[in-house]
Length: 98
Image (cartoon, rainbow, N blue to C red):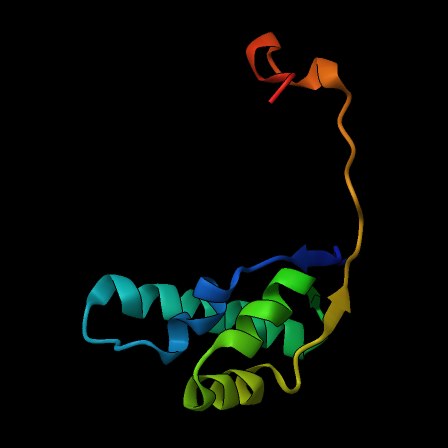
């Protein structure tokens, strides 16, 4: 039995394969993201989408936006919308009236 993984990667993670891969750390991070995207493309996992990601993609310069859209074209993406509400007891007393 395989598990369904839902992956949330922010825009910096998603753009890592588009960065200059000269540094070994950046290259390893890019390879990790590409591996995650491959699993999403094969429908083993799902990439979680959010309004924040869509906003950041739209804000990117055109050449990077186009490359990112191509990179994500075949990836299984699910939308996730949930609002969280916290009771005031969640916050420490000094932050409850901020």
